[in-house]
Image (cartoon, rainbow, N blue to C red; front, side):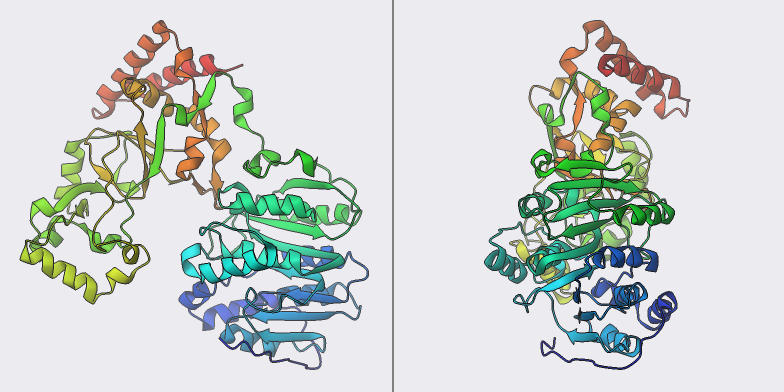
Length: 541
């Protein structure tokens, strides 16, 4: 990386045909390269919306784009004003920077080949506009950047913090009085554990004015699965409130623009809260989406009955998982392999038994997990050596294990729950008593609840339970949802102690009839429907 600033001062500015420019760039550059630098281009209408917020500061003279890309924000800025504004653009990727230089020939656009987080903390701007890179903690220099944030802002952030939030925090630090910020970021941190300290900082800082959730039917970023939000900041004293609003289309976003011109007036359909009313420890979804659990009674946290933990993470599934053909090829003895489920699509029933496992095994599915307890076998030793030749031991997870080929000691759990879903959570009763990889989370019941496993599982199968779980979901766009273990542990479920003896007997009878006929291909919807109706009566206000 070249940290030396190279100032571009050219004459004339290309008219915004940004979509064509981006299309040509994507055709000429590999997807691997674009993913390496997290290059997901902002649609021009959204860039235009964000630019107008920045220009709402009539004294704006200097604007920073910390992740310049091909310059969509610069184009939107100059499309909306003829003011004498200087734009500073930073870009870490020299390839896209060279293309940006060809496309942005404006006297007032200065482009630098520079890593935003590590330099120029002393610079301040009247406006900052950005679509920052989306990198998870293991994809960038996590420790160095977190140290930089701690030294400058006094915040100690978790190692799981995503890079885009570090961009955001630095930009807040660099904003001039009366200045404005517009960021488009994944909504993930609003509802994640690592986002708690970031939200706490935003509340104490007091400049965040609007959280706009882009709840579009289609994903707005090509090649990226994420639900996005626009965060608008103002370094003024016009408001002590934060307003949340969801928009479902570009038309709604355009209508919202008209209302934002009347800032600090409240938005139509928004939820405006004083900072003192906002809790950084809670998922902020509750401020912009209806909470299903509020419509029900007799609920307790799931953690009252047990604990949800993630499945076994190997760090290299292709290496650690075997089918019969692979086992035969490498001559790995049975005693070094454990039965496991590595993929969610291997299971299409709420009940998974040994017979189903054996079917998968005979179909040559990879349902065996390498479990090296010793190196007495020569074939196992050779396979370990092969892994080292292929650098498996240097991957992120394996490099932190001693020895690197040792899998996590995680016993089989009685219930699995899907991590990702599009049609509601999937709960699987693990009757085969085998292990699972991270495609499912493990549910371990506590001692007081183990004897009520069937009753709890019957509830988990119902539509009403899945409806309440939705309060804690994480959205990744295009209908894809995710639940982390703590999302489920803190979710509300029926209080089993509120179920009468007669109701429990009825539920268990229906559940057993449902289970008995699952593998007979009989229609079981009536049994599940009755179970759902019973639980609905118990928890409906």
